[in-house]
Image (cartoon, rainbow, N blue to C red; front, side, top):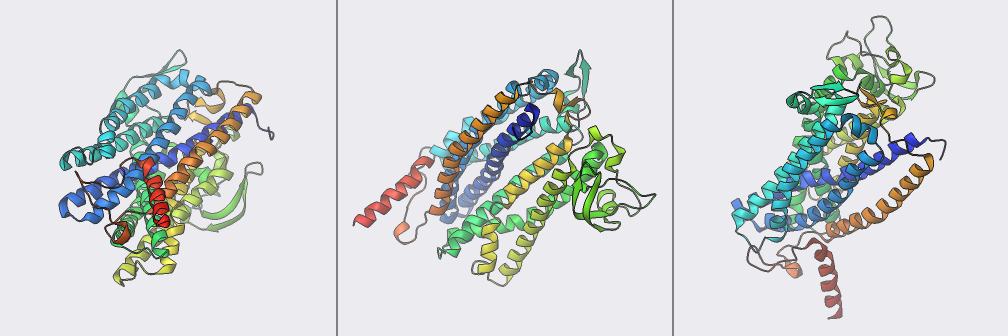
Length: 476
């Protein structure tokens, strides 16, 4: 198939399924905390705008959460179907870590999710708020265990190898491996940033179409405050993460920089753009800034960054891919910081909600956080190659050894099923976004709170209910 081997298709299949999956947990993490903040502010201020936003985003959260659970199940099965040799080698580490996620995060979420989504009129306000907070904490606990498992594959420690299998000897060392704190912070903050721009884009869409009300304005305001604060924080975390990667995975950094060889004792330049050629062992059309590579990566003007030619060809990541995926992530991050600063300037001029150029930027920045997450994961995972467990097991030795025909058929089926299934789910979620929050204004009056009638708590009823009301109004 297109000159690819079965191993290549197995890697593409895993990359395809995890790329779909990671989008949903990222929004789930951010929205869960956003919902907790909204409900907390409503309880504190008694401002019904927060309550209306809570009900609006809880429906989108429910749909997104369901798709995340379904797509996540596939990931677990693939370890046994396509990567059984990896499971045999490292399952004593990755298996318990994923089990801990189920025993802590999933059980916590399962215990309170029903109350959060369907208990608005059935339990007290404090218990409902507590349930929302528990769901938010559950998403962060899930992130903790998933990132611990993946980080161990990047920087393994706390183990022994006995009879060709990894045996954990220090669970604290396994869990809190060298790259884990940086990767956990980087992913959690990325989820908050992605959610902020998703929420801000939704508000901008409504404002550009003339739907200007307190709920929409509150959405945009909260999203831009989050972007202003968190996007620069993410840049700082990324810098620390880069220093950690330079220490533990220098070949990945060399590939990210497209840096092939050092010249004498000269400091390393930063290659802004170019085309790393793995066969020619050079970065073509390179646009360089002298000294800047050393300054960013070593925080000095004289230290050199490891070069790709210092590593055997079989141990080099694919620089062509990670060079550009990293720059996409960084470029979007800079746009996010710019958007947050522009929003602050407009806020001071009392023009945040009426500046159409800014609203269009906020609209188009909606998927930027998710794209940056995908680019970051491509950088991380492809940059780890050719290792599945860095320095211990090569990816070529980890696959189940299925035939090319088998991998071609299953990959094609995954593509068809995923686009059909999740396409419908994403389409429905976008319908909910286009509907917008129900407020107490005009024809959209919807009184309520605990114990009073409101729009349906069932997320799959919300859009249909709106369509039905519209048809009745047209009939009248």
